[in-house]
Length: 255
Image (cartoon, rainbow, N blue to C red):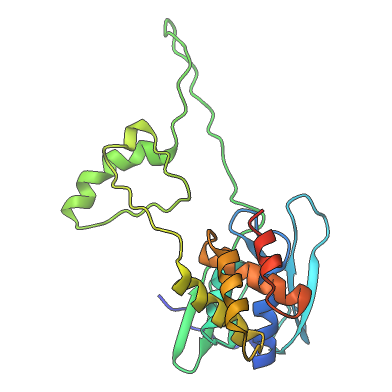
């Protein structure tokens, strides 16, 4: 369901230069190794501040972005990879209601909805175990993850209702309870063509007009073994550090 925005929402308009700046800066802000890869959009009366912070840091690294802001100051955190996708699509209008409501990105008739990241985390209530009745035997009950508890029970209902459960992860280690219930599909790392497409996108964002074929081949070789997101981050980091895409800097990201 697409939220209906009104005058209570804060609106941010980004220029082409602001989008290019965000595409270069956002992947390199601290905190990409944290849960949900968060960045914080701190919106004041005049500026959009893009911010990142490592898990153990107290202070946020803040990059001011020139933007047109209409509405109240508000701060919202997003998964940086979802944010980057919206920017690559050219969605230059951002509408924010509050820190925990969906954020709307748009341009013309195109829209993307991104759910915010709750930096404080969910509130967890630990239930009090019932007192053991007289004569009952007490012992230790093994803790089982929720996915292991619910998946087998949910499977018959999902089949009859034509529902598909997709679990994404970077590791293939399944608990024994689920090994026969799930089908594992492996996706190969991107090849040279996919990496060349990512490289082309970064070159366009950084306004790099051309690159010698030999250098381009070295850059793509240096990025081999990275995912598309990792390669994109490595290319962007190279642009920030050297104003060019250097295969040596890209290769260091694999170390």
